[in-house]
Amino acid sequence: MLVLTRKVNESIMIGDDIEITVVEIKGDHVKLGITAPRNISIHRKEVYLAIQKENIIASRADIGKLSEIKDIIDRKEDKK
Image (cartoon, rainbow, N blue to C red; front, side):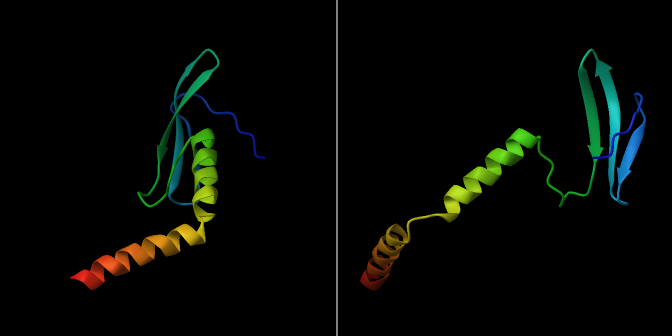
């Protein structure tokens, strides 16, 4: 882990496209501003971990249920 010291309005760069700026420091809270391309997702770590967990759960979908849904859709299309 790289540890840097920055003051308010000072930044760090990650690669050529991501800039992180210290916007405000109040007590033990630090407010950061992040400038990055729109195609880069930025989340707090706890939100990122929750998204990853939900993606894993979703990827374990019951194949039997998916097959049942496909059968229902196929039957509706056959009636048309």
